[in-house]
Length: 432
Ligand code: 5CA
Image (tube, rainbow, N blue to C red; front, side, top):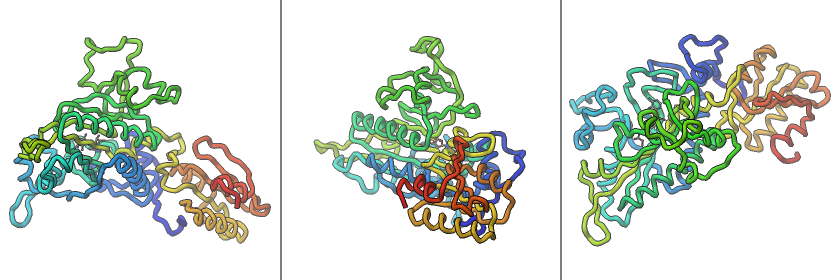
């Protein structure tokens, strides 16, 4: 992508409305634009990140057998009267009427609708287990939307819903999703702590929130100090070993009955990036769902549901990975693999060298953001640091004479003078 043809509206000054670093950097890096309180447009750079996060979520979920669907954002309210939740969500739920005076709502979550789909088709235990998921926009009229995409009113959620013939199978699925969540967040460079939590308006008997530690997080959590060793990479544990460690959300933590000694207990702020729920028969019972069981007797399916804050993750990753100059993207979600800076656009040698590097890397499938504009060098460096691509190749007139360029690692700041061939080899892992 050539910057001269792209849409990357960078902002130099710190936006006064942004209270936390990820919100500030997302606005400054031209990733998002606020359209109303808690409602954002995703600009091209932000959209690339969102799509990369979605790709990791899709990949890991499909590996464990989840099946993608897509439900509408609008629902008739009748289903919610059936489940008994019509009143439970109160003003958080946005309701309106269509031209025929039928009441609709903008989905804040989709348990009712998935149950409606399920009961329309599934008649036997032989079709179970079944785990359907979508990545779809939600709306919750939050009292205090804040921190940019962290607590939006409209936000992108991955929501999965599973159906089972018995408690044992539903429990197995719950922990399968729990382990998949750790893999999903780890691929984004995040270590999430799964804390036992309150299931709130979603309901059910068991739930865990996945929390990424950050001082700006909205949740207060308590956990075993062993998680700090896991986070720093000192200790590696399986999902099962991690499950045995103490971790609790604020409302679940009872100091009087905490099972671990004080010296081992840590207290911190966290960003909730995911939440899994063991629902039991709450929705299947309320909505009258049964399937034929193995011995011909009808059974009411057990359910689980599993959410991930896809748009919130973009902010959470930035909270976890930035410095004073801007964002530092992990390779797995970066909007482009690298930035190519032409320090003297219009200079024949610089242009030719940049073009050949751009062509080569692109032909090998690398996503390159080529700064071919005629802005001054300082502005180009600052802009590239701000948007945080993992690598930068800088091409200037002096080096171009000798076929030499500079390769900068955004995270370490390390710069190397290298021949074009050496840079390509470095980035492509192959000799050209
Ligand atoms: N039906 C279940 C999951 S299938 C559900 O709605 N769970 S939830 O309420 O916990 O939301 C799932 C995830 O969405 C949360 O863990 C959080 O990461 C994200 N989320 C919730 N509210 C917001 C919000 N206002 N802005 C951004 N992300 C949010």
